Amino acid sequence: MSWLLTDDEFAEAAAAVRGGDVTPALYAFIGRLVSVNLRSGTVSPTLSASGEWDEEAIADTTHDWLAEKLLRCALLQAFDRTSTPQALARYLERTFKNWLRDKGRGRAWPRILIRSRELLDAGDAFKQFEEASRWLDHQYGLAAWSDPERVDDVGSVVRAVYGLPDLQIVRERGRRAPTILSTSDLQALLEHVLRTLEGTITLSQLDRGFRHRFAWAFEATSVELDETSLEETAHPAVSEAEAEEAAHAILADVTKRQLEMLRERADGATLEELAEIHACSRGTADNELKRASAAIRRHLAPDESQERTLEILFALSFSERG
Image 1 (tube, rainbow, N blue to C red):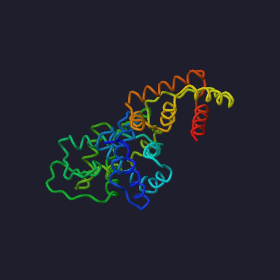
Image 2: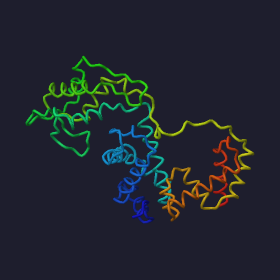
Image 3: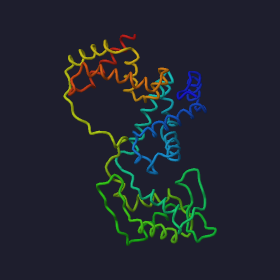
Image 4: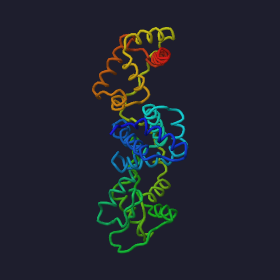
């Protein structure tokens, strides 16, 4: 099965979206796109509510992206601005990464919710009474209970989280994911909340309580998509004349396919997508990009910024193609 939509699937999806619907093929493609990006190793797991990109986290993220962004006119905009499956993939990938970045900006995920889940799933004191489609909605209670009622009032959960005052706060400001509580204190707090409410609750409800009581921990530094990326180094910009001269030289030194791959890579295409678009292997796509990069290095000094030169290069390629 092709990673991208076929031309027929693209046309059917475009017509369906303009009519207010989404085809099964488009749904499947969106799922593949999210999975490929989250499994690529370039997206920080701190942007996942579970702290890792497992199947459940990927499914939850796909659902949230659809609900919060795509089904609110973003899909319609995507088809209005693209005319091929390849262009749609690049556009949606940029939209997805921007959406992820916006969700993560301004805070790091404290691990208190994930540690709560681990305690509720593994601790002898707790029991899962109902399983839901999302792990955040599983119903948990005390293991000694037999047939407890569900607690539906989120406000009562928030109040119960505040109900155990003698907690030792762990303030690790230098960490992206603050610990907040020791394991023993967190277990004591979970037991207190459940005994107070005398009914089952969800991790989603607990999350609301944690965000109220430990608001400082949810106001950490911003989270970037790739927390392993190297620090950016400032390079002196080339003059407009130098940039244009270098762009013309590079244009004469690369093949049409290398230039197209370079442009598509700059737009966010992965090596797998380049291989699909150009009907070649992933290794061939990688080699073509390396040859194009070597051509750029031949015509630009190592300490010169490439940004303006590449802008001119891509503009020249469009004009020559036309």
